Picture 1 (spheres, rainbow, N blue to C red):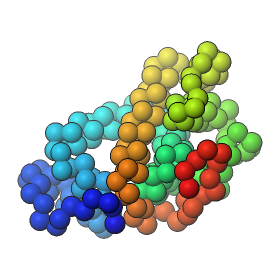
Picture 2 (cartoon, rainbow, N blue to C red; picture 1 turned 180 degrees about the vertical axis):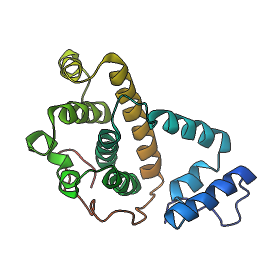
Picture 3 (cartoon, one colour; picture 1 turned 120 degrees about the vertical axis):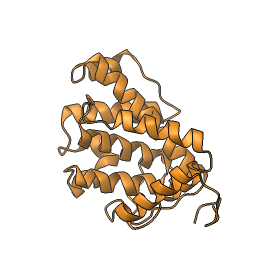
Picture 4 (tube, helix red, strand yellow; picture 1 turned 90 degrees about the horizontal axis):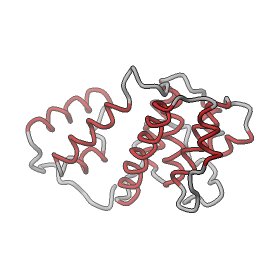
Length: 192
């Protein structure tokens, strides 16, 4: 249960109640973070529009890599729900379980391509408050991504940081979508 409970009879607008009905059909339940964000309908709609824009079919970052980045950012920020849901979505996008388990140690792993490592390096640098993006990091990104893809990657990382920090701040627990991230080992400096 989250730190802030939303009563079952919370007066959501009709269009959000329709969305909850779709969630129950798709996932078998309502997603707790959505119930929390939807307490502020205008903010929720803006956030949803941003996610749809980042997760579109024509994005420069392929779906599996988007999922890897989102899981990694969520691990660093200690968001159990985000790791759970994004790992579940990643499995559906063809990511192997062993690759998801290896995420905290991606630098040393042979499971990740150099393109994936560059994106994950960027995700870690942007997410950790003790690191800063520098010319060397951007140069490494440019070996694998054009400028448009770098902008999209930065936006995806920023979005996932907002989402995972919101959920972690409110204590949103995992909802049992994916057994893979079951307490992945913490990496240096991560929340446990």
